[in-house]
Image (cartoon, rainbow, N blue to C red; front, side, top):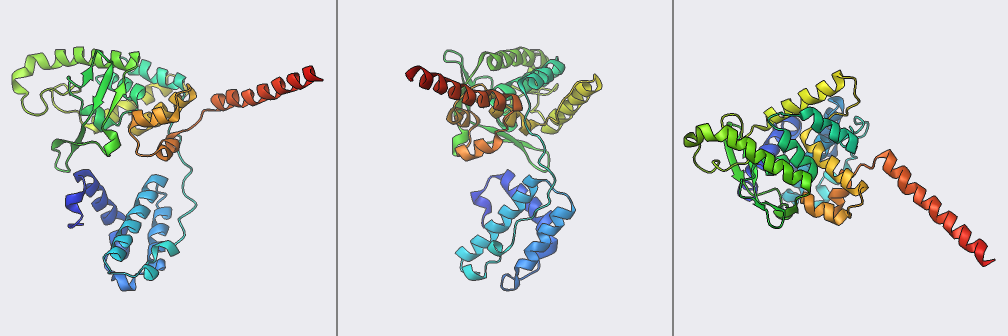
Length: 318
């Protein structure tokens, strides 16, 4: 971990340490590499299944084990033949994957209920651009090219375990990108500029340093805590359901899934969606894609239309 540290972002190091401390240390932490068996890794997997961990957590733990052991092989500390990772079957009987997307109607309903929430403009920008929340919270008021309607995504807002905010580069090289602002997203940005002006003007003298030009701020003009945003989302979803409306679970990363699914259903080419969300590969974008039943039905009807057209052409040629 110490030797890898200089090559990784602080948030990645935090994630690795969390995964190791909570899911690996107690099972394989004291076992020497030469004594590590598939059985030991299987115990890690069994623990994840017993705790009903989500698929994403299981995948992250498996990825970490694979990375650790492959690095041991690369350094000559373990032979490739003795690497137990490939000999262990992936865990099954995991909880059914939770719906991560939603329809256009559900998106619009959520935004309507968000109303005058402090984070309403943030939600709208996320839902109409597919940005990561850290990228959106790191936006500065100068990050828009208004002449070309383009948003420059170049930063990511993070917080240390001690509660200190800092700005780093986005997740991957592809994450540094320009996003064309559709009218709804541009409206959200402009609306947030007005809200920010109301919040910041009375306390401008108290806001100095690298965060003084942040677009999204809390009521004290400081960087926004993601935890506060999550709590706000939960309150909005609860209100929607309390009024008797159907509403799936919505959380921040699900907004990226929703953007991808809705954009593809609208006919936006997958490679354009990939560029907008900043994915390294189109395969990752496809994993975000959850086609809605209505879209599948409409696309399937096109197959029937093709058959009918072909039959008509054949009949006219007889």
